[in-house]
Length: 257
Ligand code: COA
Image (tube, rainbow, N blue to C red; front, side, top):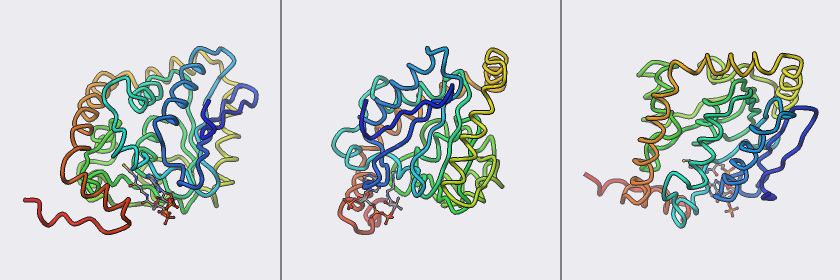
């Protein structure tokens, strides 16, 4: 198991903690693989009743590691990032998330696949795919408009507007906004442990029924977005945006028609 993902178990609650604080918990291939392995094992383990995904008290995640985007882009459906997406999207037991600080890119879109989300009031969520020359991923082009309607989804996914934890609750992307990261984590833990008292088969059946009406469409969209996203990673627009990040400068898209 990668040191960048801490796996802890408290009764039937399995916590997966992103642990790469010096890089704002940016997700590498190794981290996606460790998350996918942990979710696959948790799916099969009868003693795991729920999973909690969190970063630390200051940062959820700055999204995909940008150096990995440039040097080791995902190449196909068995790439770690796509394995992680499938494992989370198809996970049959309740998944909770606790979010503080930045939750960028997949740091926000993964929340669309969680069942209970607790955020620090000042958390900074953002899906800057277009700003990076990319396109929405992980079903966000389907799930966000479904939740918010087209124009509000377009602010988040076309303009890449950031929003706070408090705003995430108002938008219906999170359950509760707490004072800070520690409080968000504690609330998620409390709710996660509380789920242990519920009958697991009824819980899993209910989760399946809540998602059943759109799962086929979601799987189709995730696959299509994934293909387009991988294509975009080698586009001149994305290369400009991603190199600008690594060179700590503003991107310049003026040469693109
Ligand atoms: N990939 C790789 N490294 C990243 C990263 C990412 N997505 N996000 C942050 N880091 C690294 C920085 O390069 C820096 O490393 P260094 O100290 O070796 O230079 C370190 O993490 C701290 O980041 P920094 O940008 O200095 O922190 P900040 O508090 O000023 O800003 C963010 C935090 C999250 C706003 C900013 O890091 C950011 O915008 N990151 C990119 C987010 C992104 O576009 N993700 C991809 C989405 S698809």
